[in-house]
Length: 260
Ligand code: HXC
Image (tube, rainbow, N blue to C red; front, side, top):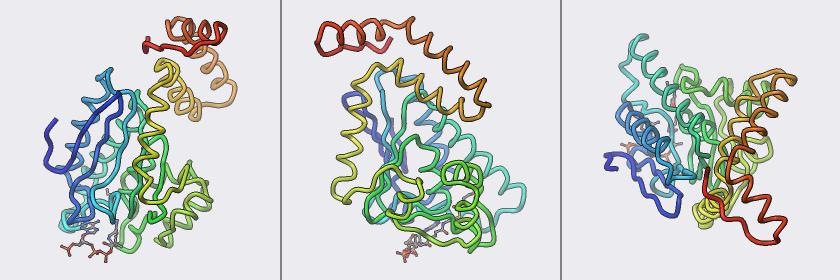
């Protein structure tokens, strides 16, 4: 796949996607959002890709937000359409069958923080900075920040970040549950690849159903979520991977999963 502001590479079941506009700290304009959309749409139908890593080019930023220069002249209608495009892309990422790991290698601000939150797992370099600084520009988050931040870190902390526009460092982001792990910058990508390969080595039917059960279950009340989990647990038993996984355990050997 060839893109102007994205780099794509895939090896051993792991695709790495890099937002590549380092001069603008990887800010998201309409063209970049559409490239992300096109790339993730291709990935969702690609059985060879088991896990995706999303990161930013350069040493300074993951993504420093939506492109402020592009947004400056928007009227209300254009702004709403831009937000809707972002929602479509970020929902695609969140609902991707494959897990997506964000390797946050610097600033993750505004739309960049929102992009990281649409991913399943966030690993951060020690140099990463997170925030929803939209209030400094006279706007609010528009790519899902008000919903995903509140769900991830709770209503009070989400309000503090969104209403003050303050940035937090990787340690604080870890403390409040916004990121899963903090790593030395030199080890970030390597750790993301290691985690991606670990996930890619498991039974992919179970990996995909596990992601689905958590995401959909969280939107249900507990009784429905439990019934839903039981349905998906049952579905696992229609897979060759379940037969292989349990046989391998009982025969004291490594499992050879085939993803079906
Ligand atoms: C466009 C951006 C940008 C952005 C940085 N740049 N962020 N361009 N949109 N979001 C550009 C700068 O203009 C500059 O270009 C170059 O990248 C380097 O940035 P500097 O500011 O010179 O770097 P530094 O002093 O190190 O400061 C880094 C920074 C700062 C703290 C990250 O750039 C910053 O505050 N950026 C804006 C962050 C932000 O407010 N994000 C939220 C956007 S609103 P030149 O050409 O001068 O070199 C949003 C809404 C989402 O995301 C929802 C939409 C619907």
